[in-house]
Image (cartoon, rainbow, N blue to C red):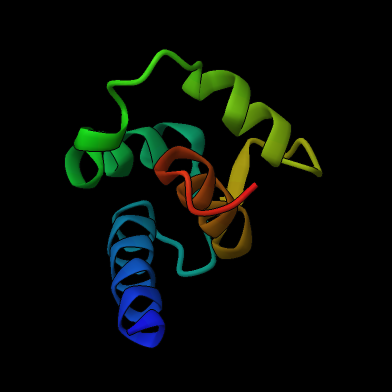
Length: 81
């Protein structure tokens, strides 16, 4: 089951990254579009998406790697720290 979930997350990530001309990173704007389009049901809580993104963009490059994306998904869905 977890592989299926990871495959779907990779599919979403790659789809949105390709729209920006990349396969390995999303811009912050691209990430927000992906989250609002695919994970809107998790964005209704009282938390700051900007703060989560900022705290997980470890190298402060304004781009989100797949690993950072997974961390964000785990944080907003409550399935990880």
